[in-house]
Length: 322
Image (tube, rainbow, N blue to C red; front, side):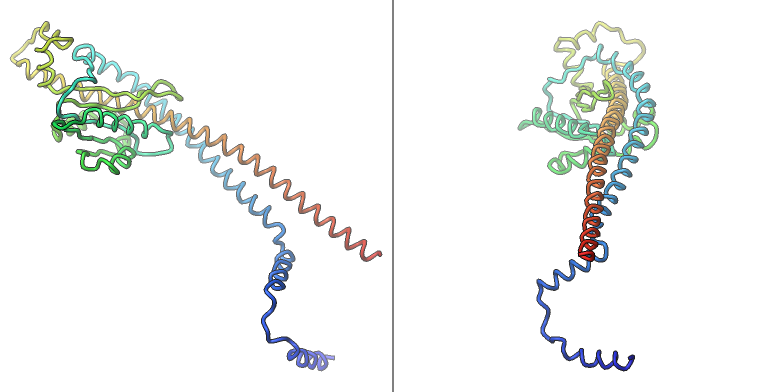
């Protein structure tokens, strides 16, 4: 019998056509082979893998929301306490955003990380609007950028106007000493008549207000005081000690700028964490909705596969009995 099988193989080999197989037939046979190998259940496998990915994403977004909430509680108290630093300066020197000067420096404060909604885009839009509003033939506008995200957006179309970039502000816990050194570096490296600080003022977890604060140079403050108006009330104060009025104004404006920047950085950090909490909460809910839809799709696919297999078994049994 073994010899007959060998002879059968020997005689059957020349009977195979040397011409290529029909592509339609080959595709049908490959589909049949795939069905035989279990490709029918590949759709459920794909859905199961997708469900696993969505579950992992949901875990990450929930964890990021909890981290943002803990950071927000730590920063919010500092931000509320820092508001008492710059408010006396606003009462004394005022905040005049509409003042017309030649040299404007726009200090744009943003975050170093993303996934926090549109707070960085809002700051950049206001900065560009201020740049356009204060531009003119004899005027000079420069940017000082605090944060990686604002730098990435402004460098595209305003690279030549960027005077200074500082990133990784929140790598360490923020304090006034750190920010005052930062403010001193800015004042040493730029020439200005008005510093316009753009940031997001924190109101609640789901609400922040884009804000622009203005700090004038000592020369402009003295000029405006001589011209009258609200700044003219500075002459009602007596200066004690051996310092002149110009020196006092120099110290006041430097201290005002450091206090405003300190508050602005903290307010923006609070807005960032609040926006990140909202974004991660929305992402977690969206992941849950997607998981529900995928679960429904998976159950329907699995039930359809079981029904098809039952029909095939019943059809085969009927064919054998018939």
